[in-house]
Length: 80
Image 1: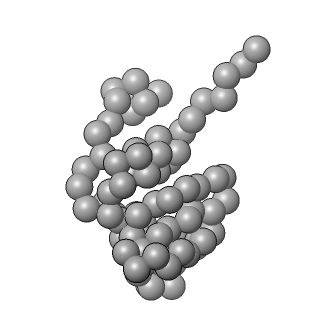
Image 2 (image 1 turned 60 degrees about the vertical axis):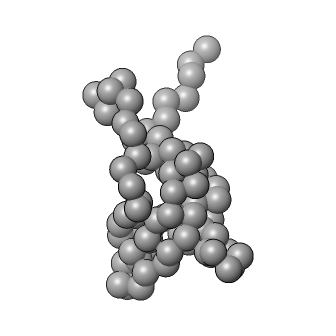
C-alpha cells in the first residue's frame, strides 16, 4: 500500500494553520488579504480575519503567502 506524500505547499500551509500564524495572501490581481489559515484542500484556502470574516480563496488566484514569522522546516521535507 502506498502512502500519499505531502508536498512542501501542504507542509507549510499545515504549519501556518497549526501555529495560527497571521499571514498576508497576495492575490494575482494585487489584492491583499490578512488573517489566519483555517483550512485548505487541493483547490482552496480558507482564511479567517480577526473580525471573524471568512474568505475562501482559490489557490490558482494566490500569488504569494507571507507569514508574519518563519515556519520551521523539517530537513526531510525540504530535501525530498
